View 1 (tube, one colour):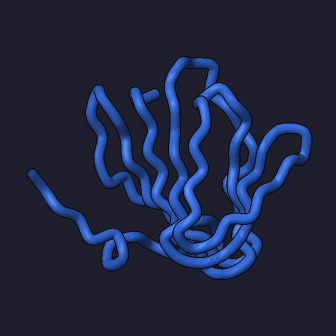
View 2: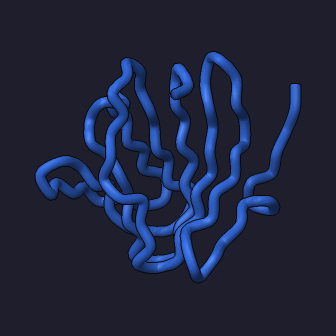
Length: 105
């Protein structure tokens, strides 16, 4: 077992969103992304089988999808999608998110 406090370790940056690899194993990967307002993880997808979740720990913005689709993303909201489905996120305020990918890419 191990613990990691991403509120203490997860970086913010004005130049690009902050990224922290929280956990990596053959079974799943956990990442923490921290965004300043207007920063984003652009819409992308991966040509593999699996699923991902994006949990908003703090802040507000939008989940991004294919063909310009957007969904509100507020503290406590979680997006669940297939890894092959286009996905991304854009921050309107300072935002912390946790991404879980299973199996790993």
